[in-house]
Amino acid sequence: MASSPTRMRVYADRASSLKCLSRKVGYPTKPAALDAAERLMEQGRVDPGCHITPYLCDDCGDWHVYNRRIVDVRTL
Image (cartoon, rainbow, N blue to C red; front, side, top):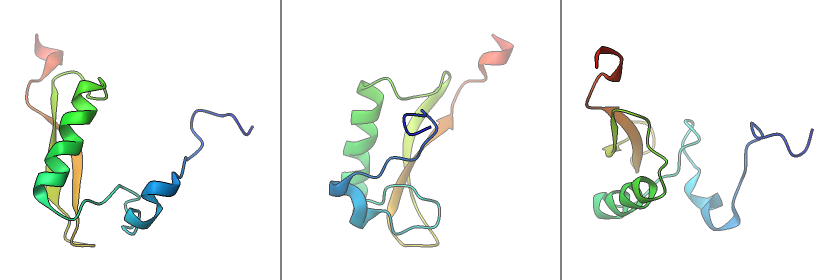
């Protein structure tokens, strides 16, 4: 089904940044990744008990962001 929510979306403005095998968006600098992480947090795209954090990818050399667990919400 074309409108399936699990279907991968490719945005034209990000197509050049999808060079990593992880299919994550790559950012050229840590400040750019921090800005993206902040935007994602403001949009509410963070998992419960997590903080969106940038990291330097060993595969492609760009910066990516991920949900880093800071509180185990299962024990609360």
